[in-house]
Length: 308
Image 1 (cartoon, rainbow, N blue to C red):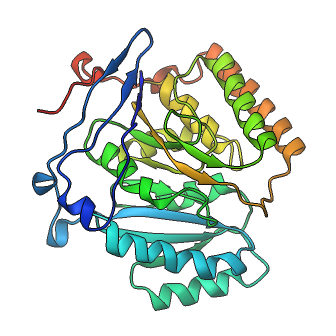
Image 2 (cartoon, one colour; image 1 turned 180 degrees about the vertical axis):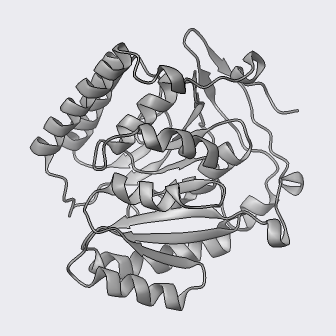
Image 3 (cartoon, helix red, strand yellow; image 1 turned 90 degrees about the horizontal axis):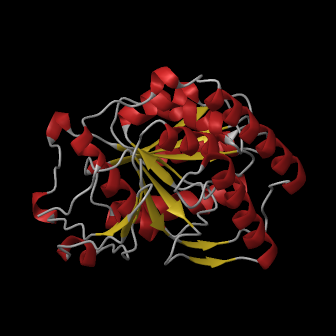
């Protein structure tokens, strides 16, 4: 499977509603990169009405985030309400917080009709996503960190990529052409080295395994989530590697990303856990553990073409 790079700038608000095209950059396949334009007629976009309306699940995993959740949630809700072209619900998943995050999440769920909250007793962003996505009857699932480090303007592009039926997953990328990041050179180097390691191990084509800003279809989530063993930081890498190796279509969306100065990522332990995760997935692929899960689709759907 190839990885599609969405190099167009996404728009929001009134401009989004009036726009009739979304420019898309190059498609990376195993041998070629084909430049195409994805033309989207917003007036004819599939929208489900009434009782058949599907909701886009926007998941926020949180652990001891009482200070930031109170400002991030209203900002996210405002963006989705004013600039989003899809019905949505926000799911706050508490990973066993001890600082009042759960109480705040419950209060926000009472304050906003589109907000739900759930509690998972153990830490781990991957565990939170499995809980929120695995039991959701809706359509597209998305997630982001509570810091909102990724500019929300890229979210409609992610959802549209998978909602269109052309892709199974869409990921925000800090390393794709057109992305803009504000972070120190050390963190940038670490990200590039890690992605280089992922590519060396698996020869994948997606450009960023750890942005934490993605969208996935209900069907892809249903099939992939049971295969992903990690429940913490390596969850995203494992999900994306398995998705590409098993034949799912991934869309790269370059994003604007601002580093969190209060990041709680412990680099050395996380790097060691990631390395062990890479080795585990590599061994499983070599042993054919996932052989029965390779996606079978007609050949013609494996090649993207311009939408007329």
